[in-house]
Length: 160
Image (tube, rainbow, N blue to C red; front, top):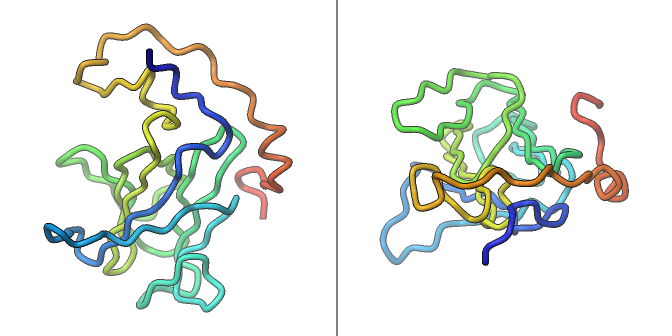
């Protein structure tokens, strides 16, 4: 039986899939960057965690927060995460929580957030919206991840 999606703090191999046009040819391996830090920077600076040509020195950051979510903050113009076809994400929004499949662009780069289903808090009991798990009982409350977040040296969102 599949359990809840409230796995351990940071579980589920959180990562970004990189593309410069949003497509990967059959047989081609898409570049993947694991998100292992509490704050990961995206930009062209030599000390950026994810270095991409053509961006500002620090173009965006992804923060792992105390609720065990990964949150995108665009610091320069870019396109917010797009999940549904035809959704107009707008430009440079506030903080955006990323869930599996959320895609955003910075410069010429298309980035897709992925996290194994067992740890993606939006998919209770392994179900998919509109799929076999659409009519499922609610999950129990999310665990309190603050101690694990603090032990990892995380900052609260909004602190600099």
